[in-house]
Image 1: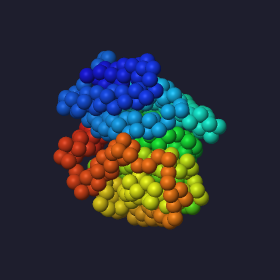
Image 2: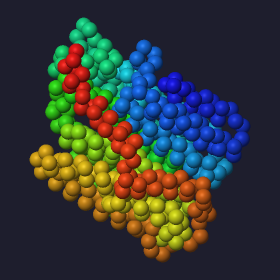
Image 3: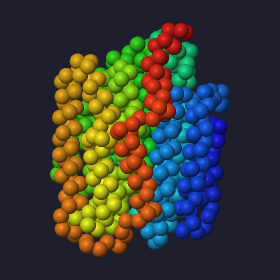
Image 4: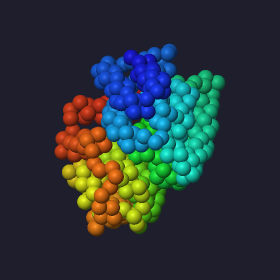
Length: 479
């Protein structure tokens, strides 16, 4: 099963790359991603999946992330044929192959229970995503691609150094397997463990896009197709968050969770503050979404930093909500960008008249992304901030709410200036269509559903993941 989750997307990527027709190739993407989704559903019902001498393990934390990544990737692949049908002038061979290969790489991150293997998988997501950012083949996209590669590669190099520190902290009995590290966590050298966590947080935090290591995001998200931006914001950054949770897990087992939480709280609020500053009067609406991603990555680590089962539950639920909301925002913004041939608020006005469906979804996505009821992010953000007050973090919770308010105003002014007013283009070359609208509607329906009802099976996955992270002390003590 585990190998099937990894190999099926790669086989589909090879098939896609061999198909000569530029028009037929995108239609194979939903089938490849759909096969992965079916395997994922089957895997979620199996208590434990192990392979390769326990280097590959699907545990309770991995099940939650695997499910989110697979669902999100499938909906994005359903959007791809409609988008690429409007881009016949450009070969989509590399893009289509990379989209499926990235699914395999993200899956490998989630399944990896070996420090070195996970590092390789995270680096693979960087290398595979780069050609997708360069899809438009213009000077700005190549600059964004190089910036993405350079900054993320520096981050991943720092993470490698942190991995060495973590292995060294075990002394002569050093190991790279997570389960062993968790079991032996109380015996790890505190000094080396603290140094390792700082390096790993900076390294994988760069990939996640936490401030101040976020500088690749505005360019990459701004120049990549909306489809790729959605996968970066809701998939690739989520697996980087997953990697950080692995090391938080070890810190918790070592009895040093308080040290880790201080760093996570600081980076969480710093990311939200950075996003707030750059979202005010932002004139490029795709860069606006990049800063929105920085904000939400900050919320994720802030929730973990608050600590306790309720806040961690809220953070993991926010990971789910954020992935689905980013699907709405990036795909609807991509539709508007393509129709108006601009992403500047100076040139895009009155989109509601020209693209009523995409504009309505963009406004709904904006409200959801800013934590407005009745959407899913409202529930997860409310859970986190309520727990912050309950744990007497009054100042931090107040700053958290203040940042949300500033971001709401900044993002709202940009989004409303795009959709309202006199249309800058009464007739656009690419109006709303079924293929580019239906997947966004499904994303929006999920975001809305999660705001009013949390399915029992999803609640079960979330509770299992929280229990997994909270039971490590007992696991460590049992050794």
